[in-house]
Length: 532
Image 1 (cartoon, rainbow, N blue to C red):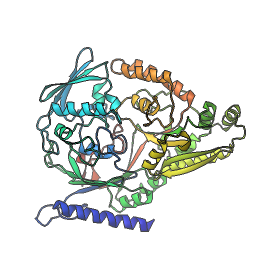
Image 2 (image 1 turned 135 degrees about the vertical axis):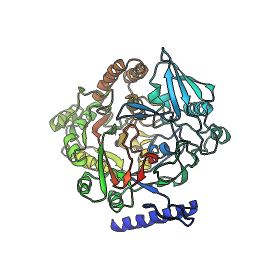
Image 3 (image 1 turned 45 degrees about the horizontal axis):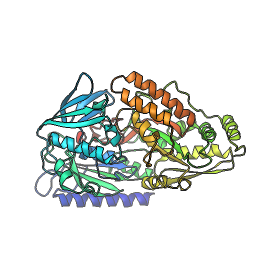
């Protein structure tokens, strides 16, 4: 592992030196010095990420890890502060809605430029959201309430809705709400963005990338909010799947921030000089999805039995180091729509045996493939604890760590028999609504996206769709509908609701300004950070 770490460290240093040279800046990213022209050396932030930083550059389509990159390159009309329950204006300077809640008017910020040099106006808002809706991919469903977008003048735009909806929360989504240059949309082919091009208005522009491995961002000199004060000139987001390497990079001061370290490492690092530990709230939870189209998991009783066999308390204690709580349904604690009084499976091996017997598997005797994202120690340990319990039921659980793109590809095989039996993954909201979990993870799908249980239930679909429509005018009624939907979901058991986690960030003590926001999970808004 030390050899791997040394190779990665040398490789990273060479990358930074090369990029700085190409940019005309002096070398060095951890201090302030003088370059060859007598100016200051660039400040370079390094985020040691545990997975692929981006899988699709199209801001209308991207619906995975790319949130950590695109929220620094693109901007949305609004941003939601989940800790203080506040809406923060970004590209919109203000907004209002009509008495019938069907028309939302946004006043836009003036003096904003895109990275392609064009000026930001209401036409860009309309072109961006219309494009996202038309493509219908990723999190485009958040805009379903929108009937039409009307440009009133250069800096005023109306959203006309089919039914009342919380458009302020939708417009602050970390996905599918990005505003891009209309000029870039109109003058380039449809796949221009996906090919690694961008046209955002964010503080950083794309400098270079290696798909699936790393992204290098450089500051956009004409950013509307300016560059007064302390800011990073560049940001590197690099996939470092080995937890030991991520830990050492932060300890040695070569990385500024990382996450998803083993919790024994967290405890050890609390006394490490130069390292800070930030335990923060999150709306992220771990769910393990059963392949309901493949025997024996097409049998509800088997799914219920496995839900009882899952060692919830041990997973929370040993895999998560106590930085989590057992899940109760798919909506995490602290988020509206969470059902604190819902029934929850508990670890009960006798109940598991009883249900297996009723399902026709009194002796167990079957094998299951469980996939998780390689490099995530908590997922791995959770799987290992589960495997030990299933062995007591004579069920053989094969555990397979895979890069996310490989796990994703396997899950989309058109033949249910060739897919995994159980896929575990984290979910977090695209915007602050329970519908983010319900629609994406469990709503019936014609084409597989994120319903990795391949589960369908018409009554569940009806309840959550109705709840979504109600959420814009009567949140309590929406919550009631969502609770009813969760009762169906828990009984049908298409997935195990393992735990709701806390975020534990590990940073270099010189890395300042970072604020965790659970609505934008794993995102570092680099513009707000600096080195002290």
